[in-house]
Image 1 (cartoon, rainbow, N blue to C red):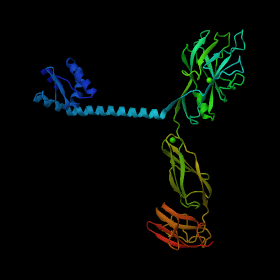
Image 2 (image 1 turned 90 degrees about the vertical axis):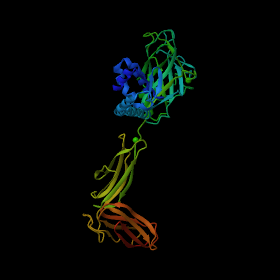
Image 3 (image 1 turned 120 degrees about the vertical axis):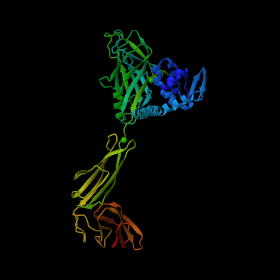
Image 4 (image 1 turned 180 degrees about the horizontal axis):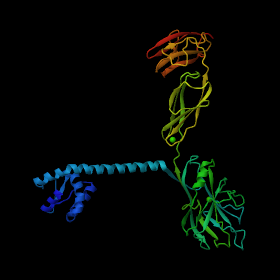
Length: 487
Ligand SMILES: [Ca+2]
Ligand SMILES: [Ca+2]
């Protein structure tokens, strides 16, 4: 406002231009224009002046000058005084606007990718069949004719013609969601009367046929109910049928080829509509086509059981479960563990429990993706055995108070034995089997384990008879037991 008054008083008209910045230029123009319109001037002036202060152009006495040189000391003082606060406000608006535009562009881009892809199919076959010539084949004609259902009184057998049109849609993945599908045929001539506005009916054909051999006599049977119709337009226009439901049904099945029969259901006598001519795929242009919007199907995630440990386990042993999921087009949002004996166990990727029922469990694991789709169930058998009397072992009902590594049982053993140990608090645990030379021959446990009593099965089928050592190592404890393998 102050500056505006300056301008008025000095008869100065400002024009601000920044190369390539249309906003600034437009604004400046409005300002100049607004010399007689104070309201407008007020509105656009701050943003112009402040943004491009350093490159300000002004017009004085018909000459364009750059910078602040032409302004008086006082004017130069006024401009920066106004600038800071308004510049910030203006920049806020610009930033917000820019973010909104970027956001909208990203959303549009995502929508374009996610929503659907459009595909156009040309017929793999099309043909006309005629009741008047039941054994003739018109599969390679450049035009196809539809005539009404009952013949002309003077030629009762020669007036019923159908079109068959077939598409190979096997490139569409089975089960893809079909957003829309439209069948287009080019009507180039009506003959004898005006059927405009009348309906041509379309029937889904699910049985295979071939344009080179199809005749009226061997045409495939069509469902009794028509799957849609389209109204006849004037000459030289496209007709279109909505065939979304049929294409979806076809895509959900395993038929690679299918199509439609198009016919005029009106009887001669009800309407005087002898025939309509369409181009076939042999015509070369304006050929029929099928336009399909294919949505993007969500891919189901896959569940993986990483570990169930120990297995088999004694009743009341702490059993640790771990699993994860993968999803090709999204991410995992939920987990579900369940047992055939105990029902739902957990909704975490990993967990531990010591309250599993005695018996043979089938453990099921599933994951859910961000589209709400659950994976297939994966399953693993878990044996929970009755607690056996392992010599020297702590009672299984309470957590151990100190570390222990017990003698394996049985010992000596023939191929299979069990090793028990106690862990009083969660820590990294390693349980290894060494030979007499101190070489490692098996790693039975190597992970972080919660406090608990553990019993691990050693299957030494692949090892020669001899003396072995079982070594338990934790962060704060290490012990070793001698074992004898006798085969
Ligand atoms: Ca044909
Ligand atoms: Ca997915």
